[in-house]
Image: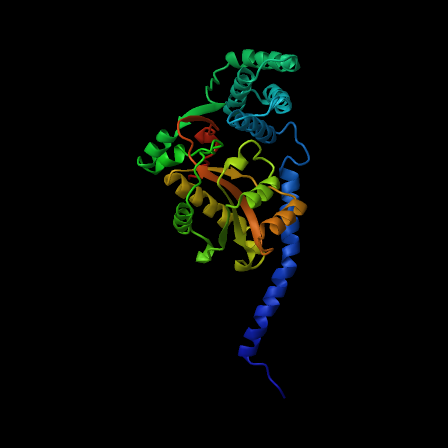
Amino acid sequence: MTTVSHRDLRRLSRPVKRMLWALDLIPNYLYDGWRYLIHSATLGGSTDPDKLRGLIMQDAHRLEKGMALPHARPGFGLEVAQGLVQSLGRFVQLHGWDASAAMALNVLERYLTWRTASGEDGELRQRTALLRETLDGTSCQISSGGTVTISAADIRRSVDEGFDSLARTRHSIRHFGTTPVPGELINAAVATAQYTPSVCNRQAWRAHVFDDPAMREEVLALQNGNAGFGDTSSHVIAITADMRYFVGPSERSQAYVDGGLFAMSLVYALHSRGAATCFLNWSATAGRDKRMHRVAGIPQHEVIVTLLAVGSLSEGEFAVAESPRRELDAIVRWHSP
């Protein structure tokens, strides 16, 4: 009679465990998908304050970004501004004014000042003025929103003033200088970013650096959001994470967590060395993600977390999106006895 030893059972347990993990991925991804569908703004939610607030903040920043471009296209932003004034009016009607809504109104007004007046925007200007009248009767007076002017000298000076100054002076920059960033500087920044914490120190992140103009152009063409400045960067970096380093349903999102932490460390490391950077969002459909993997030569086992445009600082002054931060009370949740 053949008996199965404890050692044999241990050998069998790992394959069985992995099979159970594989089967458990299905309900876990269904759980993720269902929660996202219900709680995100995918299905609308035009009365929910946070869904409306998210839409307002997104469109306000789209206008800020456009005003910070070296050369914005004629007629830029009118459709976005019209959608913003509509969402903003609905938010105020339902929920009143708050700091985010007041900031968005400031952006609208600065956009209208920046924009050359035309017959197309008469109603937009009128609705914006009416919103200002309702805000002026409240205590919610916010002055930020729009663009601010900074200089390369300001940024270089901030680097020596401690981390708080370094973080507060980091901006997404869309005015790049003409001198390419040295490859040695990028390698040194990546070496610093490698000290980012990762789950069980697995360090699954990867940095794919593109400096060939033709390859940069192909990569940028698949990212929707770099028009007017992306082609002036000297490098584009695709930050990825290798899925082979993770296991089981509980780690299904860990590649994005570790990759995101590494991406922020890399940007701070580049900023501290005097390079200009701009995150390029990679929220892509499956089809576009497949094309990017193919065009950029990124292995299928790596998830693309984000892209990064990198260039030298433009000397002199230039505009950046102000991107005001929300009040601390909207972010911090103390769970005290």
